Length: 204
Length: 194
Image (cartoon, rainbow over all chains, first blue to last red; front, side, top):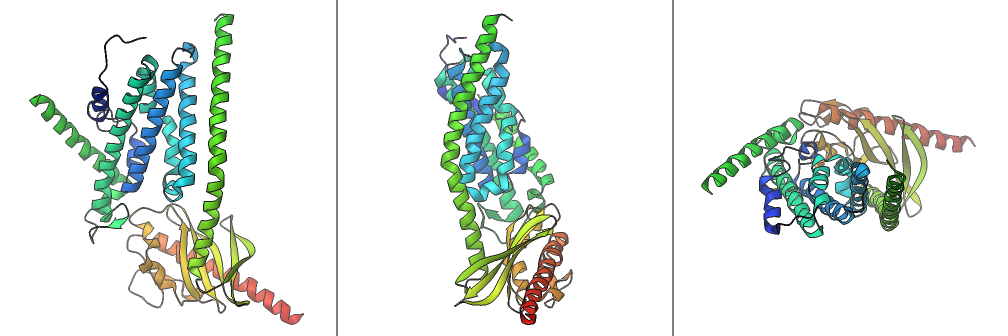
């Protein structure tokens, strides 16, 4: 249960953003990364929602880790996750109604994100609160970064706008905001990310 | 599984349900009035935007299209009706397009607005653009026909989104105006007969 070695918080965050980036490295949660990233605002909001849920779930699970009976571990993780997702869902519906209209369905889908359950099971249930929190921040930030980058390219090249404001008076690559273009965007960025990663790691 | 395990599992679940329930109830109590207020404000501003010159907009009835419930309103200025606003739905490419149409008392279109839809981003969602919606001003239901060629008399389709354009013009707008004309004129002639 208790980890004797000291885990560096910085290391945890970097791990979430680069080494185990949910989308670019683990290729998990691709459904929202394609469905909501056709404009930057939705991409960022989705990323923030996931970041919040991931951190809160990690903290809650870590708090309860000695109290939960191992046999009902997974159902309880699901309960905690769906609880925090519902909180996010209601808050967003009240304070960002416009965005919620377009992405409400995908907010509720956060319940089924493999990455959140995986972090709860693999990390938070075995560590104390602070490391769990930083692990959540790292994983969530990695997801937020990935969604922001994907939606930036999709909106700019597909619609010629950013955050809803027209930047260029043309649509250079309309296909990028269509669902098929989502796969292209994620694939190309994933390749780029991994290429950068190997280059960086090789130098180190 | 021993009795101790069973008790512990029960206790686990009960405590989590209770705490979770309290948190959710608290947040719901805080957010639901805001959500309700948002919906009311959104509708009022949408109606105002369609008929800015009216000083009073009042609901006069309900109707259904595509098995969806919609409403219609009368817009008044200084106590006299100056037009009507009707909500309508058009069956688009991937959604029902929720539309509001403002007409004058002669049933010529003044303005239309799109309340909600889930058409293809980048193609079908051009129905929100002013260049498309502006075409409706001053036209009557007989001219609600979508053409793919240049036209000022009829409605020109958005390139790549003929289905969405048709859904707005030939489905939502045309059907609702025909309904509105029949209902309002029916009522008025009824009054005359009385």
